[in-house]
Image (cartoon, rainbow, N blue to C red):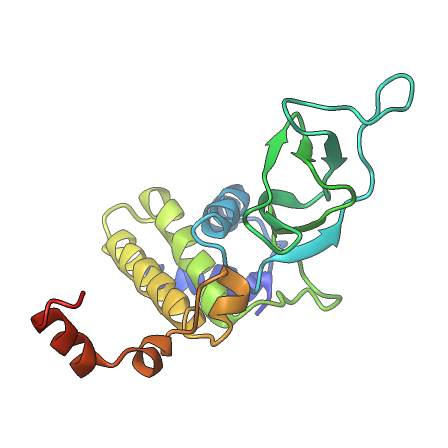
Length: 213
């Protein structure tokens, strides 16, 4: 899906469409004005695994004599990528403390590996978004929700867009949380089905009846 397809998916809720991204129109103006804000809103809705980026930080701030600049209890303050939105974790663990202040990521680790959510969506050389269609539909429905009061305030498009957004977000989250890598990615004690293999329910009930637990 490219940007034109995304825009037309949003406009389909109003039974409208545009033919290109160059011809001026009220619809295109509203879409362009709200696109950046909507993308930011959707990215912040959840830690979508397919959006997470990873990079190693090496450029830390220094003082006038060349020593690492510190802040609070953090000995290093690193420059972040240009598309940085918010940090997820560093060195593959949510236990490593960090803070984003003054345009830098502060932490206690030298040259950490940062996992972060971008602030914008990227496109490939053909202008196509390299993301699942469900997520792009999520952006389109939220875009329709934003432009509905100006484009067609009397229609039911706004309520339909809100419903489609919630249903699509729930579908994406359900699909992603069914992955089998929960222990590795989320530091859980075991997989979802570990309980069925570990616990003897009848034995546990007998222990409770006999006052052994």
